[in-house]
Image (cartoon, rainbow, N blue to C red):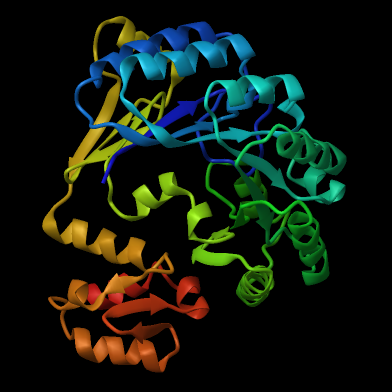
Length: 369
């Protein structure tokens, strides 16, 4: 399987209170970051086979100017072999999207846009402290479609404090009106060390609770599947297999991938490594001629197997029965999982049900003993 290439763009105009990904709210280091990225890419020029997926995430990649985006993408093509039919994804924020910037991205070979809509409700957007309004999101989606991108993905967020099923359903109904090829629906989580997590710890906001969160999850899956979407991973839906995120599938299948930029992770042949989070440290380290790697681990056979189980139970494809043969009491536990409605057996495949998706992280621990 060909490897995937991920670029972390660590710049945002503002920081969302729920976000635990690394980013900074100043563009003062963009030039230094781009130069450092060139140096990091040069370290890996001959170490990976041709990439067939490229993903620019963040942060907010569309916050970069057209000139910087051109320099960045030309750098990737200069340093790496990228297949002619590669899936090339860029994350986008609605209020950064303009017809001019979209035209530049299409000319540069970007063929998949993942738009961070989160909600079509202005009150919910204000709670999430998003920079855009519902009308801006709709305008951006219209421009993206008019610009001729072959694939459009939308990110949505549910499970906000006090959110009713009817409010979430309105978001889903508005979403399918734009016929996106891909939809990601993420449940709001109160991450530690984020402003929202602090508010939760201080009792300023409350979670919906497991039962309501479960109801919203089931509603999401049922509604989108009825509209023709394939629920192929816990949070992800595609209009047919051809529209699944090929890049994200690499993470779930233990395929090799290279991550460039501050806090980016990479994986190959059972070894995982990650970069310094700080953009200043990242730039300084590469400026000294050193790799910006902050740490690494080699997965043991047991770690690899546990991860394989965990990733498998997150996806529609599930696992092969052969992958659990060596687990203690595998047959007995498998029968229990089937009887409990958490998985189904389809030939030699073990596929999670919707209820299985909800407890996907705990299923491997049962099999691992």
